[in-house]
Each structure stands twice: as structure tokens, then as C-alpha cells.
Image (cartoon, rainbow, N blue to C red; front, top):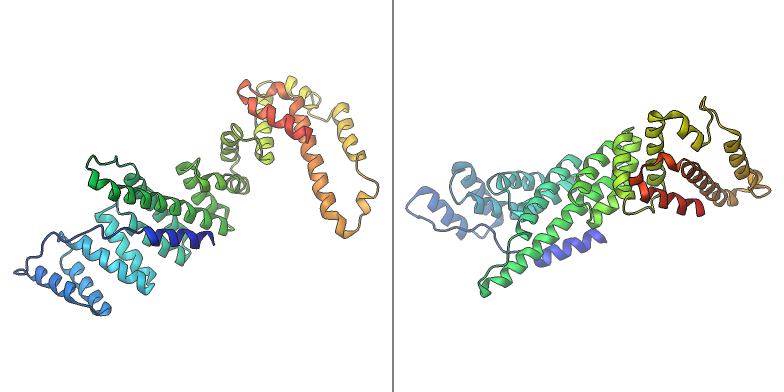
Length: 333
């Protein structure tokens, strides 16, 4: 439904032709062919003539117009390969064409090609943002057209983010999620889909074994939002491990370990208290109750981790104030 709404909005606000023919010299062969193209009403015949022109006169000033016409015909025919081919040629001549990039991106989505989606999402976003950043014209009669262009460009940019997000969420491959997700989070850190992508990207980094990037992402998120408990605990534990390496003894004692790294009596007592707090029959409950009990025990585990890391609070740097606050909130439940 979300994709359909975005597509409808784009179709309603799509701009007119970006590329125009400045003049046609009917005395030249290329001019005659252009005239023939403009007079042809049959889509199939017109497509053949357009392809002929693009092939015979690749450097002619009219080629961008020709390619724009061709891509529109391919879109109506739902010919994804030709949509992409025409889009590639058009973007090579005019990288700032948001409509060409958008149609190419949609074709890549239809093909479910993550690499192509990433490529054309980036192209569409770059082209759209360039237009959205143009200053308002001083001429009063040009303001309305400018507003329409900027509004359309913003919609294209939003769709480019959505396409990358959806492709990432549909993939089961952490590498694909990382490729698309990292691009999206870097490009739109405060955008709707950039924010939505943070947690899946964090999980993908951990699945791929890239702890450094998982921690780096979590640190950025936790600095302003401590609601993601997994990120909070990972960042706090990362601080703890760093301080351990720098000053083993003090941090081990704060965490509840002895000099040899073993659990101290205090930590064992704390953990045993959690175990004993379970309701009678937790271990022998019937199947319908197990899911609720699992969630309750997971909460206990999180509180335990928060308490352990809070106890080692001296190992968290002063810049980790948000981490301290988040741990206290998690521990309180």
C-alpha cells in the first residue's frame, strides 16, 4: 500500500518533458528522421525510428529528447531491460534527470536486482536533491513552475529512499542489507527510511560479524535515542571491553569479576537472585504459556545485563552520558 501511494503521488505530479528539440533542420538526414519521428503515431514504428536515430546520430543534440521518448515507450510496454538501457544512456548525457533515474530505478525493482536498485536509488536521489536545492527564481511568473519541480524532486528523493529500504528489508542476505542499508543511513540519517533502517542494519552488521561497524552505528543512535535496548547494551559493553584492556583490574571488579576474570560472589548472588525470582512452575509450564515466559525471562536477562554494566559505570567514558541514562532506565524496567 505504501509503495502504491508513493507511485500514485509521483504519477500525479510528474513533470513535463525535460528535454526539448530546439530546432529541426529538415535539409539534413537527421532532421528528416526527426520530422518522421514526430509525425509517426504508431508506437511500434515510432520506437523503431527513435532507436534508429539514437544509433545513427549518438552525438546529435536531439539524442536526449529521443532517449526520453524511447524510455517512455518502454515504460508503457513494461520492458525493463530496455527501460534500463535507455536510462543508462540518458543519465550518461544528463545525470541530473530525476525522471530518467526514477524510471530506471523502478525497472531495477521489478527485476529485483539489489545492485541495480542501489545504483539507481543513488542516481535518483542525487538528481532530485540537486533540483530541490535550486533557489527560488526572482521572476514571479517562474515561481509556480519552480515549486512544482522542487515538490516533484522531493517525492523522487523520498521514493529513492523507500526503494532502497524495501529491497534491504526483503533480502535475507546480510551483505545485501549492509550494502543498501549503509547507503541509506549515510544518505538520509534523519529521513523516514534512514531512521527505519538503523535497527536492521545494526542486526546485519552483527550477523556479518562486523562488530566495529555495529558499535559505531549503535553509538550514533544511542547518543539521541536509548530506546533500542540491543544497541544500548552493545555500546555499553563495548566501552567496558575497551576499558578492560586499558585497566584490567578496576573494571573487572566493577563488573563483578575477580582478578582472574572469574565471576565474583557478588555477581553470582545477583544472577542467582534473578533465577530465584522466577514464578513457580516456569520451567514446567504448558506450551501456550511459554512464549510469555520467554519474553519475561528475556526482560530479566536485559535487566541483569544493564545492572552489570551500570555497576561498571566507571568504565564508561564521560561522553557516554546517554548510555548511563539508558542503562538506568532499562534496569528500572
